[in-house]
Length: 134
Image (cartoon, rainbow, N blue to C red; front, side, top):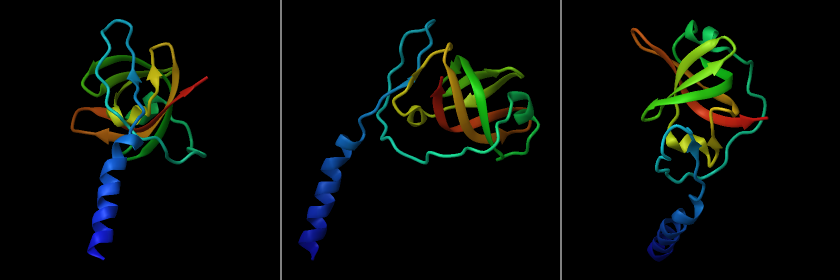
């Protein structure tokens, strides 16, 4: 029994790099390309709830789930970006793993889904999924 568990553990460890092959991220034409990390693809595909605007998101409660459509205007630093829609702008936090192999530029329309993250004097969206839309 211990041999079977050891073999399964070895197989799981050796197969992990093959499963993490997608790369992507935000491509700002005004800066040099950033290093990317690998990410495995997959997840839920289906209705995403009601759309929210950047202006509406600023007034929602902490941890409220939102869906926004617009453009990522620029990178502020690290994983922080400025998102713009027809109502205005809001800061978004997009971890590298959320890009799912997509390269997105300021000209691309995107749909982001995530949670409102309110601190004492700031509001941002903690992005859980980002999708390029046509």
